[in-house]
Amino acid sequence: SLEAARLEALPGVGELYIRGASTFEGYHGKEHLTAQAYDEGGWLKTGYVCSWAPSGELHILGKRNDFLHPAGGRLVSAQRLEAIYAHRCPLVHQIWVTCEPRGPLVAVAALDAEAVFRWLQAEGLDLRSSDERAPRITAALLQQLREVAAACRLEPCEEVSDVHVVKSLGQSDDDYRQLATPTFVLRRGHLRRRYDSELRALEIRRAATTSGGALGGAG
Image (cartoon, rainbow, N blue to C red):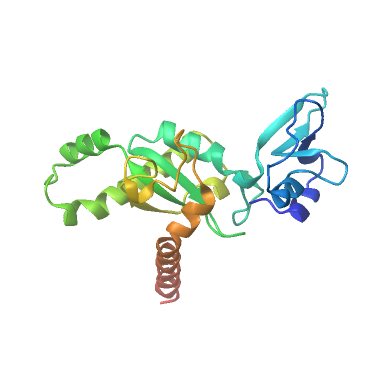
C-alpha cells in the first residue's frame, strides 16, 4: 500500500478528502475506526489517490492500497495492471499482481479453463497428464503476460517477472472465499497472507535463475 510519506513526496498528488452532509458520522461502537477514517479537521479520507490536471480537472489515479512500488520504476496502480492483463491475456481468468517495495512485479493467476483446453489441444499435449502440462502452461502464461505488456507499451517495471498459478481467486472455492468479495474485488491483505509461501518460492526461483545466469556469464 501507498505509505503517507511516499504519497506526500509526489508532486501534485494526494489523497482525496471530502466533507459534507453526505458523509457518514462514523462507525457505530467502533470509535477507533472512526478516528482512522477522519482527520483532525473532520474531513473523511476516501482512500483515493488523485491529481489536478492543468485544466483544473481532478483525476482519480486509483485506491491508495492498490499502489505498488516495483524495482526501477515509479508508483504503479495494481488494479490498472490487473485489468490490462485480465482482459488481454487469453489464458487469464483472474490475476493479482504484487511486489515487495522496489522488488520485481509478480503475479498469482487463475486460468481460463476453456482457453487452457484450446491451448493444450493446439500444443498436442495429453489433457490428462497434469505433471507434463503444468510447467508448460505456466511458461505459456508468462509469455502471454510479457506479450501483453509489450503490446500495451507498459513500462519495464509494470511487466510481470514470474507467476504462480492457482485454481481460483474468488468465491467459487470455499478455500478461497476470504480472498475476494462477493463482487470479486480482491482483498489484497488476505491474498498476501494466503500466498506468502508461494511468493517466497517465486523469489527463491528468481534469485537462483539470476545467480545461475551470472555464473554462466562469468564462465
